[in-house]
Length: 249
Image (cartoon, rainbow, N blue to C red; front, top):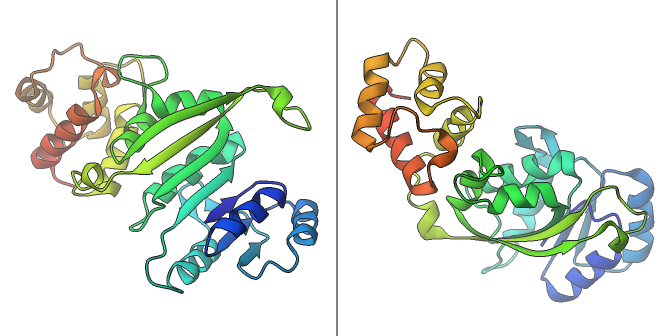
């Protein structure tokens, strides 16, 4: 189990009782010290005081190395994420974990409800976007529970939610190049209210002509006025493939 940002040792202790090994990460020095006092003596817990992220687009290499070491320690081990993620790191942590060659089999996290709504959103809704497609293109996602501010101490100013994300190998296998697809969908939602045609021309400037863009939409059976938010996961996967065939990497 990889545990990120729980802020307490109680959850880690519970995970340690059920998992072969726990790698727990806490960036706050005082919380790390308090957790260490509570977790003293648990031999299957590895505690790391560091930021889980190296930067917005990369996880901390020290964290990845610790996780790989524990997964490789015995046959049949699978990585699972258990986390209480602050809003400003939730998206990069979840997105970057899913970009790994061997991502967690499940990710269960408490996050701000606004972000949870984006993860489970359906097409043509205000919350649907690149994150929705990225997560749903590879996983089965579920909003398990909404948690009011009163459920926490100290009480936050936002409503939280628990999301449960289960990796689906069949879904994931449909994406030939995940890095390309990730960049592609983010580009398609860079200007959310633009028509998809304009987004394509902007993202592939000097590589895609207007007639080519029109031809792509025509082959996809899409109207010139369609927006990215109207395309479901399957349609976005097809579009990425058609565009890549037309303009290359």
